[in-house]
Amino acid sequence: MTSSIVEVCNVTKIYSLLSGDVVALDDLSMSIEDGEFVAIMGPSGSGKSTLMNQLGCLDVPTKGELRIAGKNIRTLNDRELTRLRLNTLGYIFQRYNLIPLLSAYENVEYPYIMKHRIPDNTGRVRGLLEAVGIDRKLARHKPPELSGGQQQRVAVARALVNDPKILLCDEPTGNLDSKTGAQIMKMLSELNEKGHTIIMVTHNPETAKYADRTIVIRDGRIA
Amino acid sequence: MKFKDILFTLSIRSIRLHMLRSILSALGITIGVIAISAMGMLGANMTLVVTKQISSMGNTMVVTHYTGGGGGSPGFSSSSSSDKDYITQSQFDKIKQIAGKYGTVYAIYTENGETIYTGNDVKGRATIYGLSSADMQNVLTIQNGTFPRSGTDVVVGNQLAERQGLKIGSKITIGDEDSSQQRVRVVGILKSRGLSSDLRSDSAIITSDDFFTSFYDKEGQFSQVTILLNNVNDSAVIKSAIVSQLNKKEDTVSVSDSSNQASTITSTISTLTTFIMAIAGISLVVAAVSIFNVMMMSVTERIHEIGILRSIGTQKDEIMRMFVYEASVIGILGSTMGAVLSFAIGYLVVAMLIGSTEFFFTWQSLFYLPLGVCIGTGICLVSGVYPAWMAANLDPVEALRAE
Image (tube, rainbow over all chains, first blue to last red; front, top):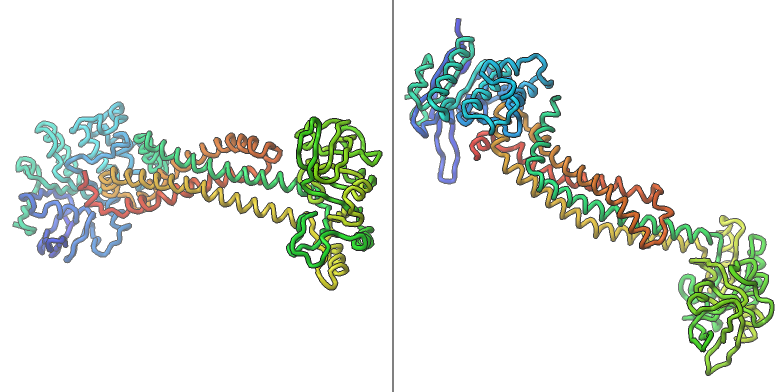
């Protein structure tokens, strides 16, 4: 039996700017089942990124209810939202977003340390890095010394280190060549097969084909 | 790598990434710490040296003619409450009667700024004291020669001897050409007494009281009476007895003891030290602005990184701690460097300006080293708190968007 791991009910997000209010999400509702692979598509300015920020608990809706793994994020304070990001969500960004001051290994280990308050002595970090094709030698390198594909692999390992229920992928292949992009997408498919819920924002219809379902957003609403 | 270490590691790597500007900021703190520590140590050493000099005469009380103010200078008169500007024989006798059982009481004749001629008619000025030979031997210490044996024998202070090139056997003519003059012979050179509340003998000529009274015609006109106490704790009793007996109708005498002078001098030095340290502290304020600037730059440059850290589950207080670590490391490095250099520079400053490092290694002096480190580090922390708070409170979405 599947159940909704993400429930979006009549969510509205309004940004108040000097030039006036901008409605980024307009009474949007949807739900994503546990273990599903969903692609979110839509033109620029349609509200995809805003929706991803809400799903990633980086921002909260102006109106409506958003439940992530059963928790209504509008009722959570900053500390609780941060804990939810750490324990339940894994984020993969278009621009990899690794910490340049840490090595590839340390980048993957960082969320583990934040969660467990101790360094990894179980071999999980090393295992994940090897699983995404980063060997010991490469793991010692800092992000700027790695190729785009290698950086995205490290980012995937980092997103998985705390075994999150949901993987949020914001254009994960947007900065990669097609071959490397296909490798990353294959990796995400395998993770989905292992039970991870994957929500992926993409512009690319080829990439969206890997998903079970595609949600198209236009003007802050589901088209 | 422990939990806390990963935040600390990020701070250290950020400092290493911007090594030059971090070193320059730490250098600002170093200079500030040197300024306040060295000045503090200078003040402390000055206080200790002066206190020692004063305490060496701590058992001395001086009674002078009342001049309307507190104490007054021997031999100088101003607005007097009576016609006389000296201690009379009867007053001396009374003081001797009161204080005699508590210590040695002796009277001093003084003539300030007297003209003298030494070898080859070299003109100079000196204070002439007149003392009985018994008192002279009690109070003064001869470095070379002997105490006066005849009326025209004198002893001179070592500084005067040096300044005027006087030796044992040198002749001095006391008095101006226009007035009466008397030729005397140096038979002894005195050991230095330093700062003294009764006799400033280092630059003076000391004659016998007989010679003084006959030459100046001041029989029974003492500039001051000195009491050398056996027990310094008796000073309050004696002071009150003298004041109550001699100042019955009107104020005729002033009594000062060196503990008053000591506290006045040390308090003055302490005020000066605080003032100098406050001026030196301006350099620390400048350093604080530099640290603030560096931390703000660090936060601005790392906004995107802060966004990443927040998005992958770093709490606000952990972000804040990371930047506070950075400011603290700069502060501790700068302050510690400052303390090490302050030790060396402070030693040199004290040696050069005071001429004695006798008290340099006392806790009162070295206390300024940890104080400087604490102030330096504290200022860095304060300077780092606002940028750290700002970093912690950045909107993660906005921070991620930053280039």
